Length: 87
Image (tube, rainbow, N blue to C red; front, top):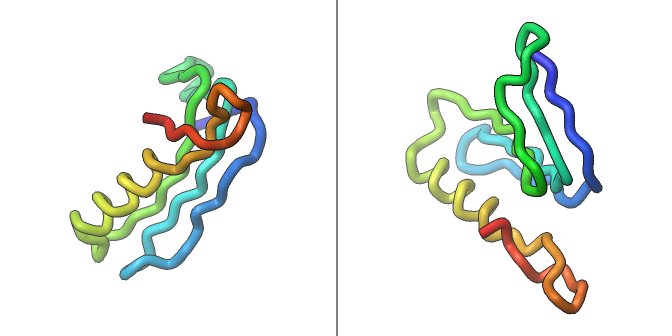
């Protein structure tokens, strides 16, 4: 599997949670996942999230991290200030 993306590095949320869940977050202008030479999925401007979870991670851990990611204010607003989330 190949993962390709284009964009500027924005944030690396790689903190230890209650268990060992990890997320690396990249703001991208485009990204795609290629499996066996065929594009399986792709996006335009948005967030590429590489996520690692384990059996010990709870639903609450996943909900907390998901909420944190979608609410990161890392996109420019009308004034050019990083003040907008992916939402």
